[in-house]
Image 1 (tube, rainbow, N blue to C red):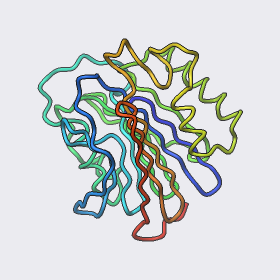
Image 2: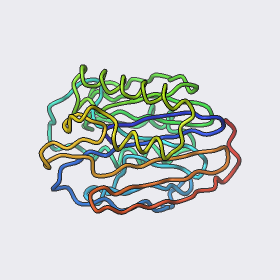
Image 3: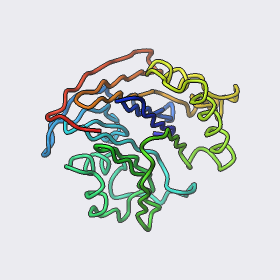
Length: 241
């Protein structure tokens, strides 16, 4: 939930997320399909709070979470709900943007959502006081880095690494994207795409969604326990790009 990339490629889109967490946090549960009011949703589950940071709905919608809004904040505990639970409440909808606009975020820690539906891509930031919504160009790649872990200079540097990767890989495969999420950077363990801050806080998993117009593959790599999982998901109806 701390580094996210979006890449469009000839009839496909790729969402990929690096989750950076404290070593002491409970291991996540590998991706499964769960039934909600609006249908089935596939996601890895945070075993601590039962929420998630990336998910795919059977209606074809996809969404990813990052911690923080626009700048690093000082947490004010206790919060009413975890961001991962709020994420699922928003994901359980026909269109996440509508639910985001309507849902109460009072006493919820700041976060950023990147949401996709049928050729629409939005960045939604909650700064702790106000909701902000930005439509993104769906035809070009994007990268997001969590403001809770990276300062403006580092975020800009990471964007440069991503731009270089895209220039060198104009039509990347999921394998190439995962390679970037594993090894992108300059060898600075604290700020590389796969980060490690003295074994206390580090990248514990990488999750990727490869979506076509009627199905998707969700690949999950548990870096902490050196395990990987792949799930396929056929949508309930054909979704056009």
